[in-house]
Image (cartoon, rainbow, N blue to C red; front, side, top):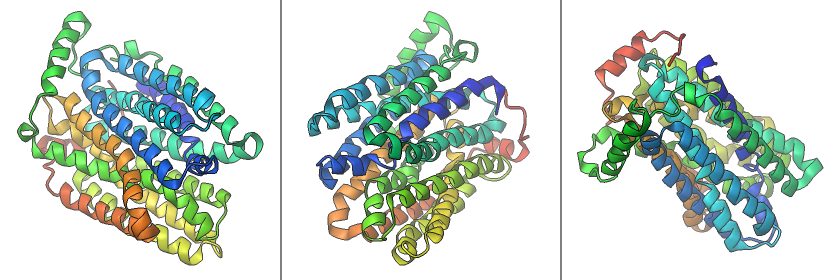
Length: 421
């Protein structure tokens, strides 16, 4: 792990563990409290809208105020609404308070996590950005969807859902504090464009206001395409946690524990592949990896997420786990997007990262929205087919992304060591 940013990587990991503990059980828990599946889908959709808005703003806010302030803001936005969620909304089983508090909390993790990502992608040398982004997504995914789920599986039998959510808050508190360590010495108080102090902040804020007015037609097409591709990348992963737990238990005749094990294996494979693919992509084509490993690979393995549990779930869970691992590896094919984005708009990398992060945020509401709109009419298989088609669409769209010549040259000649700011 690069020592210059070791506290940020470690803090991100612990923060995302806390954020991800709920991933495998919150949807069934809310249903158990008396909310309908469509109501829960709406909660996750509103949460996703908040994620998207914060993800979009993260890069621009880093440009205007510096990553440290953005990370600190995200930390606070996560903690305060979660206290309302745990102290009032859940005990009183108030749908509207659940919707509002959980929805607002959605703006928290993108500001913290993508603030760190923006810092990395602007401080790390271009030829090592693939590795840096791979390590970022390693920590992000390890916490959100692997270690968080594992800790939930250990905690739930002893603490139950409600107390486990409190344990998650403690992990978030520790991770957020850790992520703030040393940022003043690592460019955390400097704007993305490299300006320091009051004059730099004023200039950056002027660019922030102007960036908000930039017509989409004036942006390079590749910047818009990378936003859409990034949105497709994670849509399925945010959608399946809404409805697939019920499919596993009710239709595939698997247990909740087996569902959590499936998630752990899927994202364990993903975090390992994230680091490997990130490093390999620095040696080959960033867009080629996205097209074939990310788009085509994810489309094929996504279909298996229905058929393998449907055929073998109750009889041989190991086949289901293997399918999840393949899906996790395929999703890692999108890692090079983080390295590619700043090269598409070198004069304003903060804006480019905002588009990338906005796409990531949109995936958080697009995934559940697909469930909300199509699950009643098309069922589980219909939703899975839609996700698979979206993955194929992302491959087609990536063909239209122009990888800059200097970026291709840097990726081919990149050393796999020596990340430094």
